[in-house]
Length: 142
Ligand code: ZNH
Image (cartoon, rainbow, N blue to C red; front, side):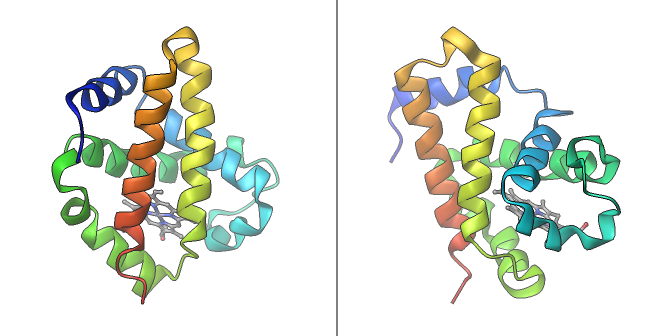
């Protein structure tokens, strides 16, 4: 269900992503904008400034690594994210609404990096990537 143009847009956007830092940046934004999401990270220590918390940065890197893997398996996103869906639904009990929120803050991070390369087709393809990934992550919630 991906066109060649969408795949090319996702691949070109993905080249701008810093796998080391952008996940932590996005996760910190989530924790700033939706402070109640901090309750999932009670073991991470002081979250009054999430962007300077090393555990937030490390966890964001982990989340982004999983998304990077998903971006390289566009034709099998549901299978690729199946185990993570199961863990979030049945073990971590993360409200799945937060996957959608994470996608939104991540798109802001991406847009500020791509600048003029964040064209309408790239925007649309990335929105679709997150929509399909969030669907896949929602799959094991019953
Ligand atoms: Zn998550 C974990 C991914 C979102 C919360 N995660 C995790 C991991 C991964 C992920 C890979 C690891 C797992 C294991 O261990 O194996 N996530 C992810 C992705 C996404 C996410 C891809 C997208 C969107 N999460 C999310 C959100 C939240 C979360 C939004 C909230 C808010 N996670 C979480 C938690 C955990 C995880 C809490 C656990 C941590 C620890 O413990 O360290």
